[in-house]
Amino acid sequence: METQNTFDNNMRQDAVPSEAQDVQNVQPPQPQFVSQQERHEFDEFKRQKRVAEARALIAKIELSATSVTYERSALRRALKECEKLGIGGVCVLPYLVKSARSFLGEDSPVMIVALISPFGGTDTTDIKLRQVKRALRDGAAAVEVTVPVPAIKEGSWGYVKKELKRLKRASRKAILRINLEAPLLTSQELTRLLSIICEVGITCVRTAGGVFGSGADEEDLKLIRAAVKDKAMIKAEGAEAPGRMATLLELGAQITGSEAAVPMAQAVLAAAEK
Image (cartoon, rainbow, N blue to C red; front, side):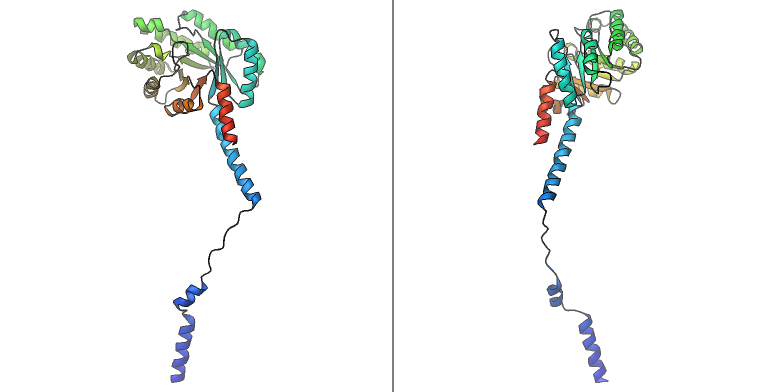
């Protein structure tokens, strides 16, 4: 009997290892070594991700080529760079739409935008309509039409609403953006104008054409975003540097316009490649 008990006790001791034995059996973690090839592949993955993000950002830029001194030769060079860099679009005066389409070809991903009545929207509605139709025939995929600022200042809101309705019909399936010329309007005028734009069913606005002062005041952009909510996309003009572009996008713009689109896109891409 005593022999049996001794045997059982020994079996229990063998079956239940002591804490000391547990400590002895724990193996220290083995260091993980990353090969040079693996490190290179990971660095390349990160670079490609940065470049993809940069190109997505560049696609939100449109070149503003609306100066009255902009020549065809300069436009040809600029459009070549736009295609190379992946810039989303180019905004030109109606006079250059056909040339832009010829330089880019029919299958180019760079969108041609025609700016109609840039100097305060002072053309009559009929003239604006003819310019819209001609720009679309010449190859524009989108038109930006400036609101009739004098009519707004006079309080002729019926005229404004009627013009917007006619522009919407004339643009058909093309993209119609309304150039607000926000620097010329009071906050009350801008708010009422945006209400009419949304009521008519126009789904894209541009802060300003850059002819009168800055293209996009931050307070105006905040007001525009609050007024249109999710009913309209916003193009903010005046993104002359990557930091400024980032600010405009953070404030609610989905597209930015810039005369310096090409060097800005080059800077964004170069930073991503590092």
